Length: 263
Image 1 (tube, one colour):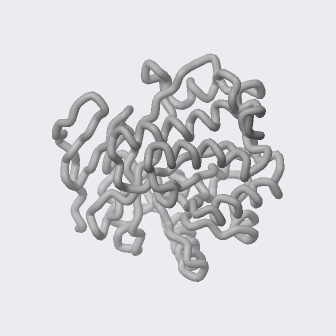
Image 2 (cartoon, rainbow, N blue to C red):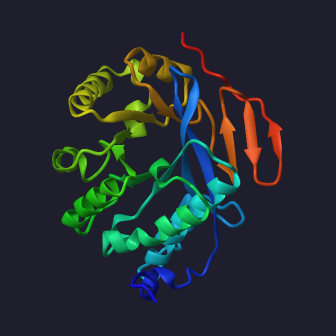
């Protein structure tokens, strides 16, 4: 038995999950860059209801199950784009060991691990900051992409960025909301874009919901966006807002989706 098989990540969670996928789009090329995997309950319950069932007894198993379920579902959907997976930094005790199941699942399903992005949300209070840095460095060293999610909203912020430069930063949706009307938000955005260019970090605008928000961000040179303006998350399915195509595990059909214009 491997070290990983002896840890708490192999204990049962006491409930089942599914994955919903929301596209992260490359607006200039008009294509889907990646899909973020978002946890849902077995009967479609929202993420909040699912996360309320996570505790100290099942957090390790939950984190690992989310990873493997995301990869398995993406493989069944024949996803060719990158797959973005959220991870819980407080559910990792040894980075290399906790990557073992991810590697095995990706290899088993012939899903390129180079196409996997790991996101950590900034608003989660990290109990071991040095361990988080080690996790990021381990993931990057092993060929995975890394992202700080909800940047500007929580505890990590510029301090984390000063110590580790991820491949991407996802701007918190509070910054994006009505940004076309908010001068302070616009100034903050330009500052972040300037820092990101210097550090060669990609910016993703998360929570884009209106054409005005999209248009302003497009004019500022933001290339990667995500939000309801393009597509809502789809349980066990993929949507492409540019081709108006929706693919599900059980069936494939076309759906009428909004295709954003460039102004």
